[in-house]
Image 1 (cartoon, helix red, strand yellow):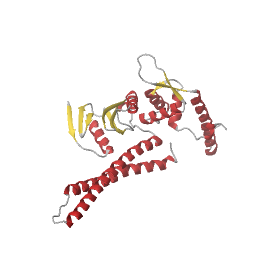
Image 2 (cartoon, rainbow over the protein chains, first blue to last red):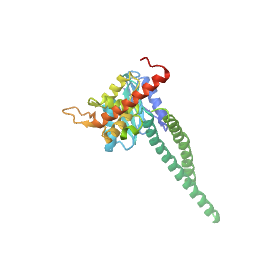
Image 3 (cartoon, chains in turn orange, red):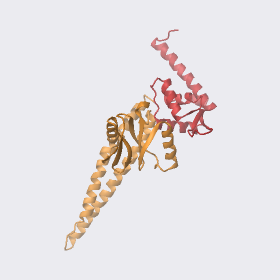
Image 4 (cartoon, rainbow over the protein chains, first blue to last red):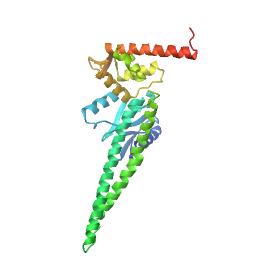
Length: 190
Length: 109
């Protein structure tokens, strides 16, 4: 039996934890599209889930080769969304981590960090531009007879600015801190 | 001085991947073999293994094997250059072990 849950996640660590929690109860993710999770009923704890951010889009030859390698290594590609892939492995095959040493973890997390950085900066730039436009128009209109405040620009800009800041603090910064910690460890361990 | 001995030690993952490829293996076989040899201590992540294999291929320390028949899985095997790296690493490891045993008094011989 299939079960559909609509839910939005920004933080893929929390998303992974949620998927694994459900899988432990016997609800295993079988497909994903934007904010829509499809689950199949399996025996509890059959699968362990991980989410990875690919270097290139899933359709590219590089990512195709990589995903085939994963499948050959006993990792099932459950779904892809943009550059994100939802992976699972049978729990009976042992623990499941995609990256197992410091160097490759740093390389991977840097990819994720750069993505979140670009996203937050994009939101921030669009937001501040719109706020700027609304202020300038307001000042200009104040000189004429009827004052017209461009509310669309103002609120749109405000929302984007706030989102940019939230992205930066809740998505970019934690990954940056993880990377710094791993880099310190690198002086001591593999 | 040969180039290889100027470099540091191999990472544990690279060392074990090279060792496992003294016989041709595919990705899953490498993970299994290394897991068994280290009694479950070294579990190679598939992403880590994929990155390492591509680097080793670029360096010509390993090569792919033409797989015959129906098996679509790519197999890898160590090259002479790769074997040289393992032998250099063994010398470094022996030195580290001997010094460690001597200083800590663990040398039984």
